[in-house]
Image 1 (spheres, helix red, strand yellow):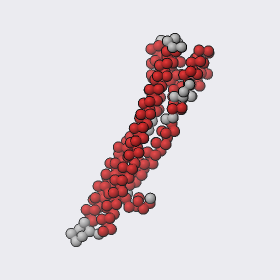
Image 2 (cartoon, helix red, strand yellow):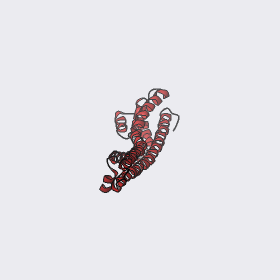
Image 3 (cartoon, helix red, strand yellow):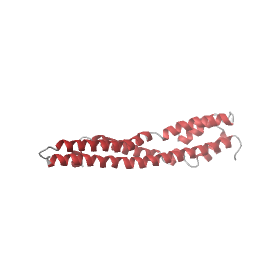
Image 4 (cartoon, one colour):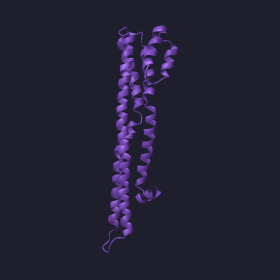
Length: 201
């Protein structure tokens, strides 16, 4: 690996930094975007049972606020359960926007890395080509200098693509997962509103 880095020259370092950032974001999002942590199954039934028995007490609201993003959405709705259906929905929508922002954390950075990495590779390619042309002289170029310029050009192009392809795949995967989780949270929140206002049993 060190030999590749040496052969690729200094343009490889921004790509390496981008790859480390991408790996960190991918690992963090794989851990954080688990459905069991965002929108646990059975939470709606549990909340409905407790609300029907004891109402929206402080203990229930505090527990939901610390539970999960879906729990925070439910807590926001139950705090306004005594108001109209529209007031409760507005409170849920506000909490939902906050939860969505939390789910989308770091995704813009990952998308930027996926877009910029090939450009960093292209920059290395251009620098390698400049070195190749700089090594050419009327009397002939040094094979070592030509080989170094070619290695800078090719290694940086390859590394840029190696970072960009998985980053783009995971970016698309996480975007789809966030959309699915947000949709699930919206459906659960609508069911809670209907239950609280007597439209669902």
